[in-house]
Length: 315
Image (cartoon, rainbow, N blue to C red; front, side):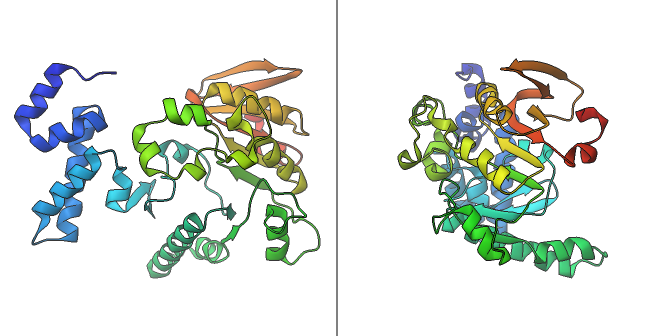
């Protein structure tokens, strides 16, 4: 959508920096907020030379570099997460999802190193706090990150199951109650045509688009990870599974994949799943609930003892 000429004229007359950020921010309020954050960050980094540094930050942002990379961090609820080029940026829409202690799996050394850095920061902050949060601190200290490839089968040295077996020192695949995944789900065509320019230029393609070597010949290139993740959930005997997707169209396809496995319930969650909005859609022989408002954002599935954890609204 093109910006109104009157909006551009107003920004030009108000502040050249505001005009520079308006095309990337798309509205005055967002541009003003970003200018304020960039100015504060410049002052923090160089109290005696903040003006030229601020100008550099504005130019970088105007070229499409994500704000989080320039600031070096992103607030996710009350948690401050480090950000840097080469890793995905935490999306605000994910704050609606439940936070869980977990074993993190990734194929990228860069992402794993940043995860370790964030973990060390959180442990340090927990140790420094005066409140008694021993359980949370202990959970953080037991949190681990492993390098593995979701698309590799168990007999491969880089497989997820092999990595988890080595981590737990068990001869068989360990059991996990919850599996959460945000796999690469954008097709090559969508990446070139509909993905935001700043995402294409600055975020790691490896985390966004499946590799050609992972292709299964499916008509929907962005779906290739989901059958393997569902199979992993079965191997790990997961009771709850949450899979992020790009949109409602992909959510319906992924829900169909999940419905063919052994789950007691399958749902599609929109951006804000906690709102009262609830509908259903029929996929094959299954009835799938669609929760919340906004775009289709994830597919949620549960089975076995998880049914008693979730409460009556899921039955």
